[in-house]
Image 1 (cartoon, rainbow, N blue to C red):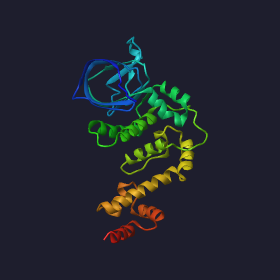
Image 2 (cartoon, helix red, strand yellow):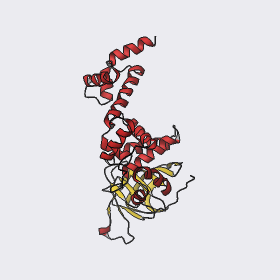
Image 3 (tube, rainbow, N blue to C red):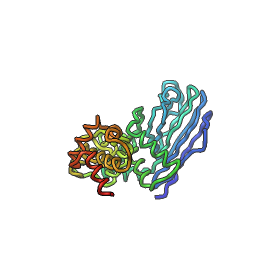
Image 4 (cartoon, rainbow, N blue to C red):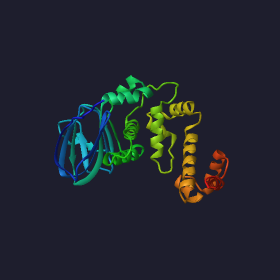
Length: 298
């Protein structure tokens, strides 16, 4: 799908502090800005496509927004850290004081979003979700994915599938999917499993709650847990533990870290906790397994 976004944008008193960094993919355009707005600065934005804005610093005290053309005081509200703006919804912004900010804009093709969401929640629910604006200060679930995407936008180093998976994770983690008619039973798709792999890899300790994992693929916690076990044969947390043990094995062979250091890096409470989990999974303690592998590689 060839996609070029278009947006009407008028600003006063807002200055980019460097060239915008952007990358076009199949059905999306990602743009990263570092900018400054003066007190009294204002902007107007209107896009025919759905749009996500994610700020990497708090702007709620300096920027206010409204979706109505009549600029009365009571119609403005604080700008939040993350927003999903449905297609065709206008937005006016104004600065109450000077502020420097950086944010990621995602311009998204409607058909691509429908295709992404339909396998999980159905087409009608996907279309309904795309009509619901979202404004939230709670960005923990998507900000790390957004940071990884900015790195790829600034200096692409991986296959485009990696960036597309990050965008999918941001979309499903931010959109309001409440009330969606989920399938009563079934399995996760390969695309959903790929999103979970990317999401977990973005965590330095390879840990995430079931709620966070469910949000990545846009499902409720209970349905996700059931579908995940039907797909993989294990619970989400057991699968996650296997990933952490696999990473521990790579660190044992490819680094000089002690077992205690590896336990700390991967979020285990202490060396004993890692040793028990490692023995239960691999059949040997980490130290014994490392010695065995080193002898075999001589």
